[in-house]
Amino acid sequence: MQCGMKTKKTMKYLTILDFSTGLVHQVNIKEWDIDNESCEEYMERIGFNHSNCHWMVHEQGGVQFDI
Image (cartoon, rainbow, N blue to C red; front, side):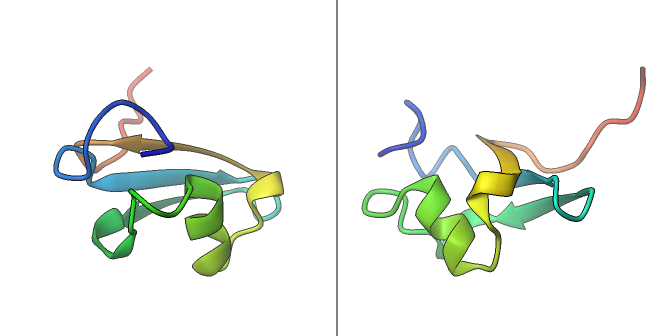
């Protein structure tokens, strides 16, 4: 696994901050072969330019806007 220490069973979402569009995207990663494909490769495959993005993988979906 190339994106962290947790397994695919634990990590369910990829959140992408796309600087080229100014948008935040959240993707369910069930279609990602996490053991054989890097985060950057997966992002490119689904249409993102990883060099213009920051990303994280995590267990629970949703975005919290409270400050």
